[in-house]
Image (cartoon, rainbow, N blue to C red; front, top):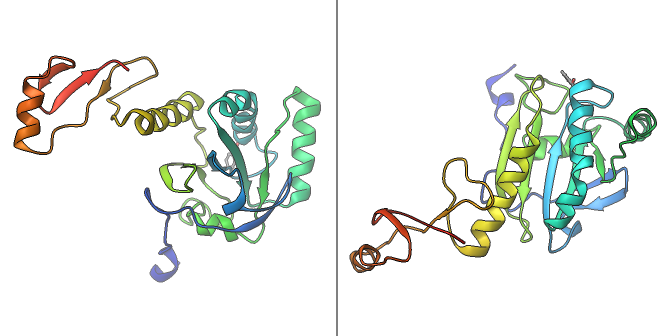
Length: 217
Ligand code: BEZ
């Protein structure tokens, strides 16, 4: 492959989520009008009717009530036709009872996959990698995960980072290594000498030093 062809603009953390129109298993959508005032998890899988993808999609489907409670809509994608999507959704429902009750984008022309850097040609030229985009209600990209074709994602981690992002926004705090709901959070470090002195005299948080303080929320 030519070096020039390998270079694609990948969306980055902090970018506005690129807009697109697409056909999905729940009908046509315009992404900028999808799930207004909600968080969105946009995720790709390599192909319908494949084993790892079936376990992942089932995981998303089984956790949908939890994502609903976190004001978050799910939307999947693969480089497959709408007919393949419908047949796969129906097949998994028949075989396992799990119903993929969220839209799945049919991206046969690879338009959305390329727009979101989900097509990574040195991994596969025809299948999307396992990408997860966490998009906030202002349609800003807040966190991105990419997994290769042969390793499934971790649902606990997907939920953990979603809760972490929402907690950070709500309380204006940062979250330390391995943070999970209920753990202490990090108070943002001071930015001036005056704030540093105040922090050194502040006994309301657990202080290692002025730059590392934790508190309960
Ligand atoms: C799978 O989902 O099992 C899979 C899909 C594409 C390549 C390898 C594995």
